[in-house]
Length: 232
Ligand code: 0O2
Image (cartoon, helix red, strand yellow):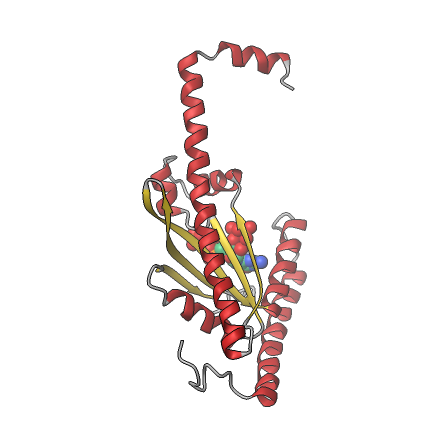
């Protein structure tokens, strides 16, 4: 329900401006939709790998897959923060995490293996890799970030779309989601004591990952794909 003031403002807009606003709305929806399709493509690829892996190796390296499309407000906020020109082309070139897929694996080895399998696919182009597992952030954050480009086939042809894929272990994911909540609870001004506690907890999570993987290997041996039993 519009307020009387909003109604008056709307009535004062001439028809041509209204048409331009509608066209901008439609273009924005189309722009965002491509990212949703790109995200769906990547999820399908990961789901296929998961299913095939379980069948062929009797082992499932993926615990969980989730995804999110950045809200338009967040895209605009990032655009302003980075001082990007407000055009679809510059947003496309500069903001590469509009479509995001997060994969949790049991073990670090699985995370790397999955990244290898995904990026080896012929229609995937790797734009950027940020390996926060090999080089954790100062606060202890760990995750393997891939920015990949995947073709989306529309009635107008193939359109490459950037998708950010974050691959991490369950322990890394547990830490990151708690840290994220704390960060927002304190409106980004987290007390130093809590920050130190979080960094310490990140080290504990990394140790746990290493110990769990060692134990798993003691019981099950190296994964069959490492032993070269089945070629993928
Ligand atoms: P959301 O809500 O998860 O999307 P760039 O995009 O390269 O210009 P940016 O965005 O700093 O720079 O890239 P980076 O370092 O790859 O981080 C992107 C995403 O990784 C973040 O997205 C988080 O999801 C995650 N991330 C990075 N650092 C941290 C961290 O210290 N703690 C937690 N919990 N997550 C982190 P967004 O857009 O911040 O949020």
